[in-house]
Image (tube, rainbow, N blue to C red; front, side, top):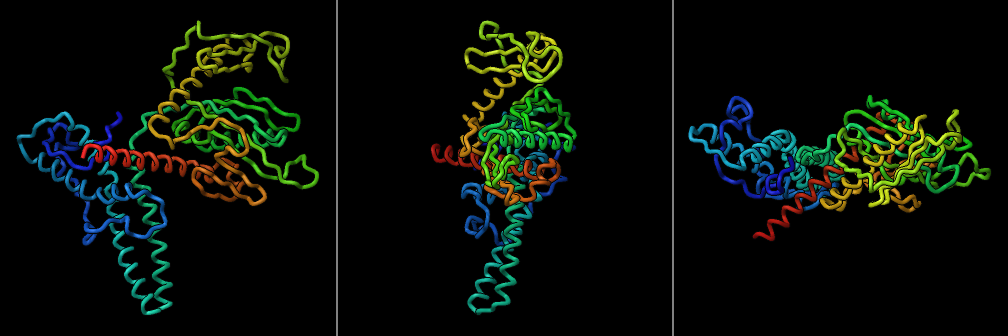
Length: 432
């Protein structure tokens, strides 16, 4: 259920009674303690506190207001529980959901308050030490400030993660497509390495990984490959891999040691159990042809390959991995439905938020989401604007790559919350 902005990020707490049936445990909230408000922090805004993070001012104001909002909600709900004459309201369920979300974030909100108070005290100490030209004190306080600011940034990320609305998409099966882009044989070799990385990550997460098609090059690379990945959280964790991946290194085929830049494109298509896509026969062009490439008796001999074109959109898919034409047609239809479903999701996401760009379409070297620089042992994710090192470990698809995937999820949630906060403030301005 998607909540309206006014209930996800309310500026004013509506005052009305709550029906006892909505109380989470035992019909009351008496077992829940509200957030302890740190003394001397209610009069300032943390936007004035120096920090290393890049949160918007509207987000800082939102975080500043959470303790008072939680206190107010707690008093209302607890007071209503004590009152025998509780009255039902149409927005009751939304308000209770808001309280529960704040309840989960309450420990982190209290920690944030304490960190902000600590930073204010340390900044005063640093100012005094600077005036007295006490070098030892300046160094000691500066180190403490650096540490606490980093801790503050981390706890703020945790709060925003907990306050982010659920996306409502729980898809546990995906179609992974990896295609060599610009760069010839080197691009194909890198495509094979990326494909193996995702296969290793699927094993690390306990997901099933089934090859659908695998078109190899002469020296061990791949022109294109498709796989079906099934497992809890597969789409949530893999959807940010869609886009152009750029690699910079000396190719195996290079005789003079020159660094080459190549690209590989990755697409991650959701495959939900029931895809809400209608495929009408009069909108499809189905072509039957012979399978190509290395293989068994059917390849280049029988018309078993199937290509389907969706005429309204121009989307086209093909399948030739199965021995029977009927099976290839069935899988091609499934692939086309998944592709059209992904386009529907992208259109909806683009309408909701311009910054949530999950997939990119071009394979140009300049159009990339990530760069793998092998001479410097560095991976740069351009959406996070962050560098990661130890490429051999990352390409194993284990803990190192999982940390990168989780950071992308957290960044996506943070952007979602910040945009909804900004939208809420715009609504407030327009109705003021």
